[in-house]
Length: 449
Ligand code: NDP
Ligand code: 2IT
Image 1: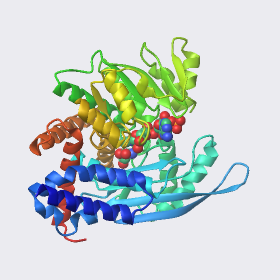
Image 2: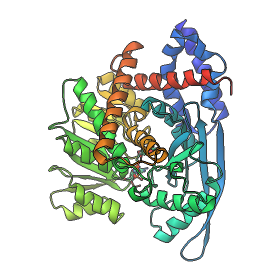
Image 3: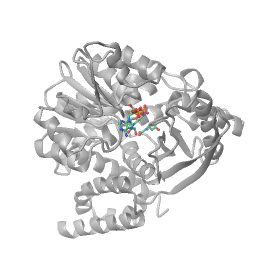
Image 4: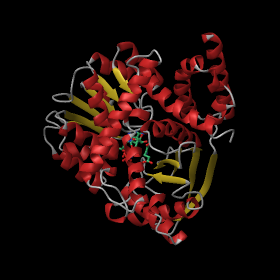
């Protein structure tokens, strides 16, 4: 039975690999979920019927469009825009927009695929989608960023809506970009449709805690992981890769929970501050000046900047990869393990390679995948949608308590599901299975569509 199911899952994968040639990140994301499916199909063969797996792997709609814009010198540039509307069984498509030169269709599909299961795990009524562009925001002026966002939305507006598809931020897209995107949507449609985008500013329809939500959520999740081992964040050292939206607020919450964040990075290298990262300074450098991480070491004499290098060489109790995909490989995982890491939680999407995940499994290190650990961002986006729908606005404390409760719920569901399917303590299997079953059951209920 087991061999037969394994062969069937391998066959599904072959079809996906063949149909989506040249998209390695997408293959990796699908393979990771499929690894958990064998045990589900063995228990309940209905999931192998009605083309369910094939339908799950094929996006409902993929939109690719031209984004022309004019720079400050009057030169015309052309970028490529994407929106992959992956699965709407649980609710409107929901997921961020990424602006980074590495963006291509395969990257957007991997992110959209992950988003289906992540959104399912939140327990909130949101489907999965993702979008973005190969536009590079680095070094662009305010005017250039605004004109790019306006051009991007000039096409995207036809495809989104409060009941259809609700984008938000991701790498390279934060509050500033959401503002320009929302402004253009409002102008083009002549509607103040607050629910069409999340991550909006507080005084024009945004939610308290959305800015902080992904980072806070990762810290809440790792606190639950440590609690399950009879430990806590108190007194633990943490290394956090990246220094963007997710990393900054993960650092803040780790400090609030009594831990000490000692290192963070950007694509040029990493800094180590053994006394604990000065968050006000980091925010000034990254959020206000939009500068480089080396400026931190310029300002703090006892801090060290390492150009290039691998941040995972820094010994720590807790590791939170919060930058980008495949930034933590098996060799980095082995270094972390040798240095005594106790828990690893992914703030980024798919930052750990399959070899890295296997190394943590082999060593018995608690490892939480992004679709569970970083779900706080999209969950708080869904809370923003709730507030928009009821024309309400909640306090910071109330919203933060909702977020903390959602993260505790995801932790409990993940760990219970892992145990139920014979994989106790395995957050990867727990998250994949719990996320999958809910979406799959909804797809059955809605018929072959
Ligand atoms: P930001 O753009 O705010 O920050 C990204 C950070 O990661 C920057 O420090 C950036 O450095 C670094 N980084 C990006 N690409 C690379 C690279 N190739 N190598 C090294 N460092 C890199 O993005 P976010 O913080 O919003 O997103 C970070 C991760 O979290 C992404 O994987 C995203 O998908 C995920 N995520 C984000 C959510 C959100 O709500 N924003 C929700 C859930 C997940 P540099 O500036 O030098 O490029
Ligand atoms: O990867 C993610 O979950 C996000 N970038 C946030 C998506 C959202 O809709 O808030």
